[in-house]
View 1 (cartoon, rainbow, N blue to C red):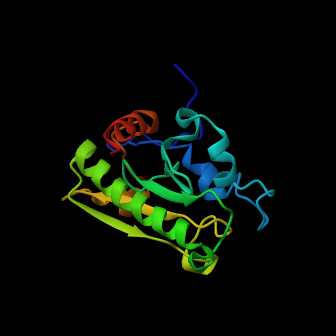
View 2: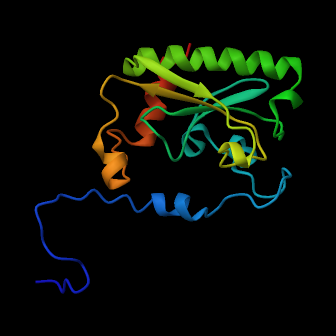
Length: 176
């Protein structure tokens, strides 16, 4: 039998361990500066393959990518290629394509997963909750009846039923 010292006392709870989230909690890998050369993941992702970068679709001015730390399965972000922090800094072509990709995200999520509703929005600035404030990105979070339960409240854990690579493939196939 393995030494369980320090592992806690046995009880009736089943625990879901999500150690990959510790990197997010600690802020590991977050860009430290405000420029495109400061390790911004949104600048690095387009240089990756779609599969490695979890990119669902690419446009001329923006791309759609799965959130590496999703609130729900299928949590997408629509991101301009250009490194800007404010929505008011986008030019008209970027605004137009960002809107079109948001609509296409909604359609693809409905088709691939039967999403019943959505949370769509941007957190502009660190004080507004932006995890990566230096590079604008719009969240598209699919929702279903009953998708919120006690796990995030009691266990600070989100249960996701599908691997990101599998979700990316389904959404890429459903993208019109």
